[in-house]
Amino acid sequence: MGLYSNHMSGDSLKTFYLETFGCQMNVHDSEKVIGTLVHEGYRQVQTVEQADLILYNTCSIRDKAEQKVFHRLADFKKLQAQGKKFGVLGCVAQQEGEKIFERAPHVSLVCGSASYRNLPQMLAQLDAVDIRDSHPANTARAGAPSTGKARGSGLGTRDSQLVRITGLDDRETDECFETEFTARTNPHRGYITIIEGCDKFCAYCVVPFTRGKERSRTSDSVLAEARQMADLGYTEIQLLGQNVNSYKDPAGKRSFAELLAAVGEVPGIRRVRFTTSHPRDFGRDIVEAIDAVPALCDHVHLPVQSGSDRVLDAMQRLYTRDQYLERIAWMKSAKREISITTDVIVGFPGETEEEFAQTLSLLDEVGYDGVFTFKYSPRPNTPALSLDDAIPDQEKARRLEALMTAQKNIQTSRYKKYIGGTLEAMVEGKNESRGQWIGRTSQNKTLNFTVPQGSLLGIGSYVPVRVIGSFPNSLLGELVV
Ligand code: SAM
Ligand code: SF4
Image (tube, protein in one colour):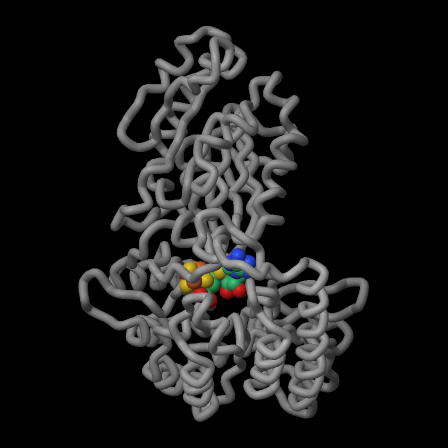
């Protein structure tokens, strides 16, 4: 990953280290946070030891992800003595809030994603205090604006000298985190967030509590960013949202499908992806847009979570198996073959063996090209916490294994079909030890391929590749010359 700094002399800048956990939304949030920090006069560094400010952009979708950040904070606690400051951003920050200061007193900043707009003010407050300075004026100097509060911790005399800056009060905002300073890490393909938050409140999920209410950017602003990226040489854009297809243009100009088509028509853009789609808001117009605009990739990620109507109802997904399959049928009748991937949760409270078997049969019926599988993890605040009949972890693990084995068999036969055909691959890199180039197809499949000796390919270029072999998760090919 590239490291970012602005044009000022590197040594005179304050430095920061940022580690990101979790989903693509978090990865892209981090790109915007990095851009903001650099604009505020910071320089990104590669190690915690080199940094003045250490930030973790966190994920709390499952318990395991949440625990990671506390381990990191414990590992580096001793560095506070050198005056280093620590901040927790993202979903764990929003979920745990000020409790983080109790669990990890060396943390000075706790900020949820809905408050990132206020980061410049929070950074200025943080900057104004010296962690090693034991003078109580530390907290007073930081000020207390309405967002990005700084205050004494109330944890006793010694702790009252600690710095506590929070950005936790913006979950009801209508505003998105829009910035012109996004520090994208890949020069060829980049993300654009079009919708933030979530209003769906599935019974198992923390996202509505951590990312706040659903809010969309205007389609004009999204298109302006897409054009700007095309001008900078980007050829692939991925539109992001927890439910990207629940998008509602605040200016009322374009539906999601119309925005998708418009991004696909931006000159210079060759591939447009979008993730994640919610089945409830998945309209036929999305498939029609894919049919009409060649730049829209022939891949849709449509999380199903379960193949059982009873479990779907208990999960509060608000669609049935048949309604989900109707959407699959729309995709299967498209002009191009659309590759379909999904998310599945096993071991939701009360899931019977028979209900799990219905999920397995759904995998067969749809024929997915990829499935992200999760063991149900009880999350704070969620309605599913109060459900009885927890499935023992060992049983969840067994179901996960069974599901992954079934899906591997499905993928093995699905990927075989491509042998003998030619696909366009975007060149992503080279695996020197194998002597293979790494490519990605429009359907989002990894296509590793060989080239005639002496040929050099540009990263980010598009090349035709003949498929000569297949594995459950990738294809093998050779460059068509
Ligand atoms: N908005 C998307 C949707 O509704 O399909 C999903 C976004 S969520 C960040 C990504 C995936 O995490 C979900 O599709 C679900 O499979 C999984 N997930 C969410 N909460 C979970 C939990 N408590 N336990 C296990 N997996 C969970
Ligand atoms: Fe979570 Fe459901 Fe919202 Fe997806 S739609 S982010 S699973 S609450």
